[in-house]
Length: 115
Image 1 (tube, rainbow, N blue to C red):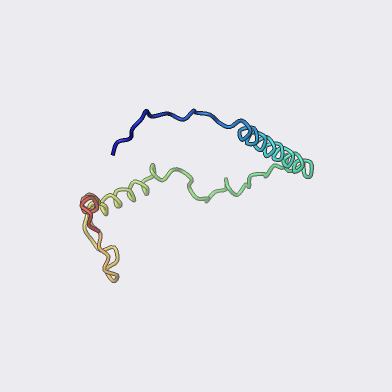
Image 2 (cartoon, rainbow, N blue to C red; image 1 turned 120 degrees about the horizontal axis):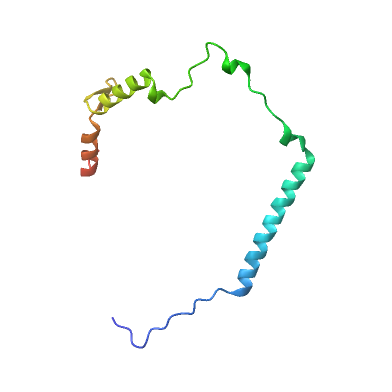
């Protein structure tokens, strides 16, 4: 099927009244937000000045170590065990019949469309 006659492009115009209504609504919503915020600050201005002191217990002896786990010996050991699990066959839940396969093999099977 072919159409006869020249093709015409519609003009790229944005209707002025619709654009003005949209701009007016945006200004009204913004003004309402400013008014509500201003009222909230007038109700309780001390809320901004409240300072919560840090508990001294956070710095006491015997508190948990707060260093990134990737840099600790425990973290490095966990990472190596996880890598071993990702690269080996085994049972994830033997009673439930769920086996673990190497991640590379799982990606190959998934790419082939198998589950």
